[in-house]
Length: 373
Image 1 (cartoon, rainbow, N blue to C red):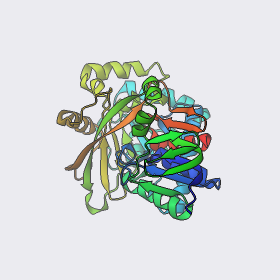
Image 2 (cartoon, rainbow, N blue to C red):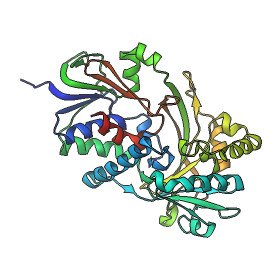
Image 3 (cartoon, helix red, strand yellow):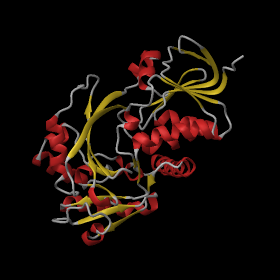
Image 4 (tube, helix red, strand yellow):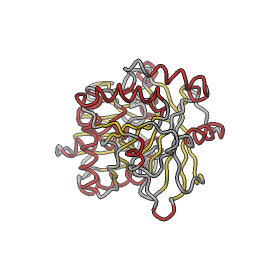
């Protein structure tokens, strides 16, 4: 007779669900994971593949991001997935941007960041993708890593299944959950603890909690090039002034207001569509570009070519690569919880909702999972 009794059941096989499965399995617990699709197809595979601790504010969230990075390194070593410890460069082309970087760097060391300010020539040595004209300086951070999301998620899944004994049920939508019990309509499983990580199941199984959570949705648009010719390598991942306005790590500094005001005057569409541009390179040599941020319950299923052009317009102000022809575009949708880093709530005894990482799933999930489990 089949044993349907588990220590932990997880609904959703994106990065949050996989991180929880890893944390529980490493403790020797019997784990089962359900995913309604034949494979993970959501935000976990529609991103840059960036682990980005430098974007997190100093304190517990930075600590969680750095712990996540440590676990990523362990998982990569154990599973064989490609992970590039390439760091990041925050580029500055205006005096107001340099002022923010100087303010940040004064606080960075004792806050736990691994950063240093570089003059233009030293920054250029870390990436041939930098547009050097007008560059005033850069903040190098050593902690950022890159994975190839579309490969990493299935590779982690295979590692959990084959080496840690996690049981996966793909194409299995969970239709009922209660304390210590869940079902996909055809079969019933029992588990001491149940974690709901999928936004779709959260929304349908616990609609009142979902509605009252404050979570909204964020649509982002992204692009990628084909593999760069002749093995060209980007080096450190790149970003520029607009990124200062996006990440909470820079928010405390009064000098940021001058940056915000200038960009609002130069092109209000940057703020209107939440554009800030990151540049990463995956294991295939492809350059991943983006992104935009449109918030609301009714995000459009249709992509805007005007937003893609806005991204490319800003990209050209600070970065370039040998082949800029765009091979693919797409969009993702992730849950956004304004003012919070995550949504972790016990919906009923032993049933936990873990959601709302607000676009930082690759950076934060492993650390959060360790705390939750």
